[in-house]
Length: 190
View 1: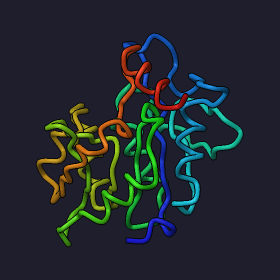
View 2 (view 1 turned 135 degrees about the horizontal axis):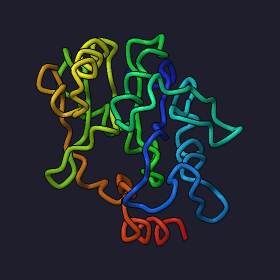
View 3 (view 1 turned 180 degrees about the vertical axis):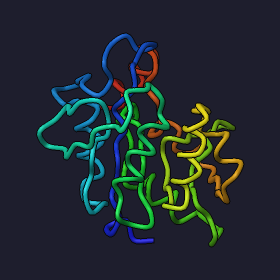
């Protein structure tokens, strides 16, 4: 899979309740989480978009969520509806330490040919908002949304998917949900 032919979508529509402020615009060393991810991955993908309720940066193309519901599934559906490629890379805005190396490792270690979804597991925890989603997934997510089942992992059960152990990238895949997680990121970016 050549990522230069697919788009990346950074999901920014969350409410950031546990974090206490808006993660998409949270800045470390003068760079927001959104711009940090964009900068780290910009050479890897055809185009990078932010997907959410509002734009956070003039540097990143923006796509409006199709619904005001506060569910990550809304961002996934919005991204897949927008995509014109068979595959799309989707990442949550709260992973500012992500690198090209991690994305490429996810792709390289995929052993299955007939998948609709490729996501990592880190120390026995799934990371559904860091992965490659095939267009075949869209109808499954739309069906779940229509019956108000917003759990991504429930939809995964109906998809052929590959789960790749990326535990050796646990720092790069730090998901900033709390101030403790933020301290890990600050140390790494210093």
